[in-house]
Length: 551
Ligand code: GLC
Image 1: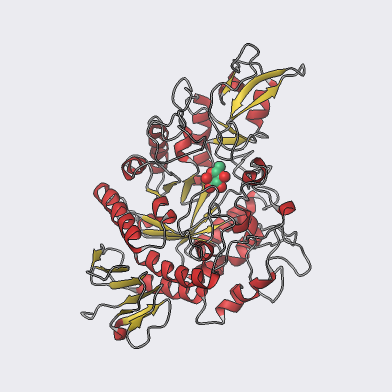
Image 2: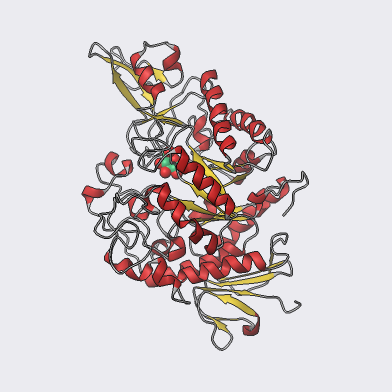
């Protein structure tokens, strides 16, 4: 599609595939994914039919939070390869017609970042410390944190440093793990250095950047105590006036960045990771001079329930359409429970932290629903995100042994929260036993894969027309080839309770049955379905795409 400014504005309709590099494909045989492995699998992604990739952080990092603790924003983690390998990924992806966005993590740096190391070696009040939030503690001996803020991963958001003489010193702020020190975005040297980081990657040819934890980047002046109410919980929604999340000044940063993106030819795009209180607050991130698009968290978190989904879809369109920004639709990520697991539970909605852990899941039911959810997501107007392994219907691995878990959420909660490792288990590519072609035979992958994944490999599913992979391939192909689909809006049809039924202009009709009974559909018009339509009936927990009879 061509925008009014002569650019393609590809982000408006693109289906992006999230690569978590550590778990995608291992090219050098050490049990961990890398860029050599990713390069070798790019043709798989082109063949799948996605428009591009979002690559989770590939920068040097001590991996205290799976790479979201960056120690050099202009490099590549040696475990993943080199800058030359990254250039090769960018070039080979481009040759295959795939866009690439990378994941910028600007709210914090690793505690191993040279800036933080220098800050620790410098005195209170020094320019080195001014890049972060170093403050004296409260109480007569400074032994209390400077304020009451808590970390998203549990515990206080402040840690105290030890001075060179061995005595306790100042405290520094970390809204996530202690190894992720928050930057002070009112500091000019931080702003200027990141201008350069953006240019560094745009110059290398990335098509865009995902902005991690965007609402965290500004803090209320004076760092006042937060009023958490009764329960001491890190909340990003249902809370007006949070002093450490979605503070208005954050938008000044994105305006500055937009000017940089616009100074490049070609269309570079930002996507906001912004979980905020209301659609009105979210739309502020995608104003014409800020980011281009934003992840749709309400949709990701929504339950498998027709009325709620319809409400979320309508609210999304109602908030994005008037500002001329296209919506995105997403079911999962490296932070979330995988759809086949979530939809097979009694609680089908998702929330970042505890996330139904321990709740039994009926994976056959979850898989049926996840198939239908895929057709719903890919029929909606706008762009979409697919997280690696979603196209295979991988479940979350709930029984990883404690000793392999690496998520700071697990470690910081003393094991109370099991964390996100279960949705980061390496991809199964081929063969009948671990490592399933992820690594060479005999190599132990960094997180163990379940034996039961032998039926969920790319190889096995490619040979099976009824597999999740075949469904995704067909849906993505149809999405590309159905004329008029991208430009069309969404119009609901009247439908029985529990059924979502809508037209996309005259291009496509989508029916999703979340009700208790099969529903009638005109079988002759069905071009794709998540479960067989027999006798004109679409089963429960199934979806169908239909070509409209007028065509
Ligand atoms: C985002 C990332 C998550 C990470 C956090 C801190 O939410 O998606 O994986 O832990 O930011 O960087």
